[in-house]
Amino acid sequence: MKKFFFVTNLLFVVCAAFTQNNMTPELLWKLGRVSGVGITKDKSGVVYAVSTPDIDQNKSNRKLYYISLKDGNVRAIADSEKLVVNSRISPDGKYMISAADVKIKNVSGKDFYPNLQKSNVQIYDQLNYRHWDEWEDGSFSHVLIRSIVNGIPGEGKDIMPDQPYDVPQKPFGGDEDFIWSPDSKSIVYVTKASSGTQYALSTNTDIFQYDLSTGITTNISKGMMGYDVNPEFSPQGVLAWLSMKREGYEADKQDIVVKSPGGIMNLTKNWDGTVSGFEWSLDGKKIYFYAPVDGTLQLFEVNYPGLTKMAPVVRQVTNGDFDVNGIVGQVENTLVVSRTDMNHAAELYKVNLAKGDMQQLTHVNDDAYKTVNMSKVERRYVTTTDNKKMLVWVIYPPGFDPNKKYPALLYCQGGPQSPLTQSYSFRWNFQLMAGGDYIIVAPNRRGMYGHGQAWNEQISKDWGGQVMKDYLSAIDDVSKESYVDKNRLGCVGASYGGYSVFYLAGIHNNRFKSFIAHDGVFDLKSMSGTTEELWFTNWDNGGYYWEKNNKVAQKTFEQFNPINLVDKWNTPILIIQGAKDYRVPVEQGLQAFQAAQLRGLKSKLLYFPDENHWVLKPQNALVWQHEFYKWLKETMPKPY
Image 1: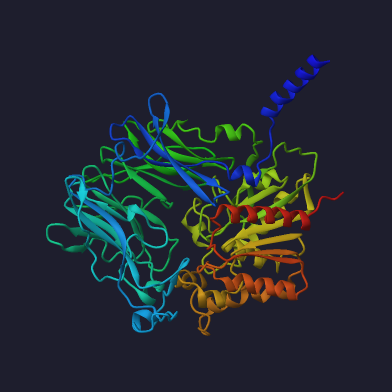
Image 2: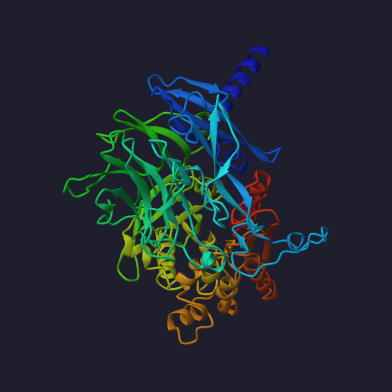
């Protein structure tokens, strides 16, 4: 009897060790988040970081590791200083650069009235008084240079004295915004050389070069009026960067340009795509880049002709249903990249540059995924109302059975111009959504990169037009399948996706039983009156709401404004809003919730006082996810 009990117990333990579960919020927030730091100086391996959320402490812990490119052996390291080149130190080792805030302008009552130190007031006479999730306090991030003597950096010298400009660029710039030239004679940096109201109206950033010997700063991209970002020198000293052509259009085609002896050379001008990021080859004859294509991010290369008359030629290196979303570096004929798909968080891979073959290098989350049921991800091509073929990603629940019926969620991507690819989000996670027994319908509607520039640009000034038809074409097509429960359809999205939810709530003709909108645009007029980056609303709206003779703007503010459709709302809606979101400010979510309540609809407001356009704190994120799925269960219950 005892022996039988022992054997049974042992079998239970063994089976439990291999039990497969669907993804849960708690498991999702235990996964390691892998990012490449760099190739080691001796080219023997890669240093990478793993950030793991600590739910109890409500923060993330970051650890560093070295992995050998030869045998894959991994070891933890305390820091990367001895292994990886420190890009902040000049190649000759004589100087160090860093960024620090420098007070330039008076803003507070204390600044203007030193005798009133207990005052709490901010005084502005121009726009750009707040940006992303911070109010302007009169300080700007500047580049400081220090001499290194006996390994010790000296006092910092500001190379941008008295300039009310930021380096790195806010809110998303980093170390890539200020770099050394290979000869250590100059510093190249990115900034938007405007401030106040002009800053809020323009996307014109430029590439500047500071000469150490003369102290003279030169605008290298002068006359190039769009975004100019991410400067990088080849090992041979040739400078390249990413450039957009049109001022005020933040989602313009992004090309790789090179400063050559003959002027500025655009390497990707004739290629119908937009570049996400790039890295020079070791020999300086090519540039490797990753870019959206047909619902994925793939690795490409383009040749740099130099002084020859050869035309640049773009070649796709990798292919498959995954995203190459970062380049770590090159060793001989191998490139180390970051890769994701809808079932797997980022890991590092080796790419054979000649063949495009990929080999997984890091295995941080392998053990976790051994216990997780994987979702089936399928391409589906849907014919739109204007007779175009649209890619729709369909993600099925683990263990999908076509003989059963499942609820389905239409996922509305933000942007509005952004790629919907094989990415792995830790909030809008398709693996987690599908794990709740939902079929996810994710259309690559108008405004998506990777399907040609014309497809991407069609959404501008047409927010409530063809793109809404694209959404409905996608959900209607998938709903024809016998395994889709048409009585349990939901619609979810954030940012422009939240706008889409608000708009579809007024035109869906009873298709959906539940809506969830996160930081969505509800009223285009108040949005344009309170958002901080006005170039975005000006371009996409076609102008200002008071321009009565501007037919494009008037159509946008009247016909495409969700607030004008509230009288047609008839469906439960969950509204999520971050208080520190200055891109889609707080009144958008509050107005929508108030409207839903006054309409008598089942509705809920999930309000985050300390979050911006995203939800970044682990405990907040877990509340977000539990409320998300709780709402779906309440509003789309199983038909028992």
